[in-house]
Amino acid sequence: MKHFLGLDDIPASELRAILDEAHKRKKSRAGLSKGAIDADAPCDGKTLALIFEKSSTRTRFSFDMGMRQLGGSSITATANDMQLGRGETVDDTARVLSRFVDGIMLRANSHDTLTELARNASIPVINGLTDRSHPCQIMADLQTLEEQGRDLKGLRLTWVGDGNNVAVSFAHAAAKFGFNLTISTPHGYAVPGQELSLARGAGANITITENPMDAAKDADVVIADTFVSMGDKDADKRLADLAPYEVTDALMGQADKDALFLHCLPAHRGEEVSASVIDGPQSVVFDEAENRLHAQKAIITWVMEN
Ligand code: CP
Ligand code: NVA
Image 1 (tube, rainbow, N blue to C red):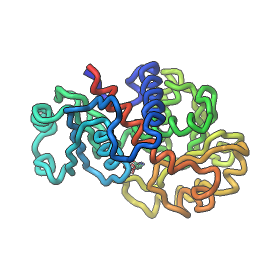
Image 2 (image 1 turned 30 degrees about the horizontal axis):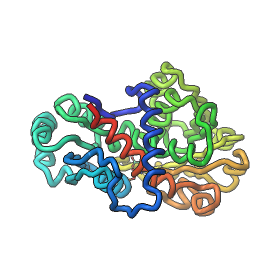
Image 3 (image 1 turned 30 degrees about the vertical axis):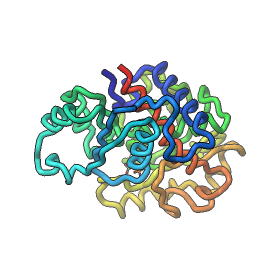
Image 4 (image 1 turned 180 degrees about the vertical axis):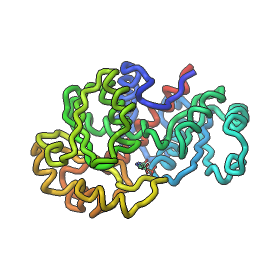
């Protein structure tokens, strides 16, 4: 049985196959209505549980529509709607849900909750974001870059801002897809050292610099994310510390003239990115958001295959 918990523990060839499937499924739907079912309906008769300990717009709607398009169905619940929110164990929740549904997507506060769920479930589990990582997001991001004609191998991606869960998944992906990753974070906001070691040990080429202008120089892709992630404390301090890391026109001016801008959304214009960048011609953030749907359909079919 296959889980999709992180890009670090899935072989590169499998991730490549998932990305190829995402492109194929997106192309094959050209002209179809959003609710139409894919011709092969690979999830006919299957149901995916979508469980949220934190808020979500893109993950929730893309997984739900994705299951419908694959010919299956989904059931969405917040942890607080469930006995999980009243202290029922993750272990028992996993064992019970395994009797009802065919897979579980979990958005969890703690990555440990996700791994405990996967350990105790007899059905596939998908990481819909944890405090550690956000692997589904990065698959959509890479799909977006490829459909813009970019070859991932050797591509120069620059992450600017907080070394958060999304940054960690980019580090994991660098090892699997062969792009060069530069990460620029202020002191105290670095990507955890063990994640960098893990990624580098798996072959990732990662450069670290505190200077965001240096980091953006000649980049093919500049990436930002919120300065205050869900669950982060002390928002005011974060906003002040991270303010010099806003992706502005001046910062984009350091990058290659054809550089693209990515942001997983939700965005905060005037904090991590200026409106002129995110709403400007180099930004592909809404294709990126749409690709959550296509990439996840490929992830769902991959975990559902026996
Ligand atoms: N990018 C992303 O995961 O968005 P949501 O929090 O809206 O799901
Ligand atoms: N880093 C953000 C991503 C949101 C999709 C968070 O964890 O809140």
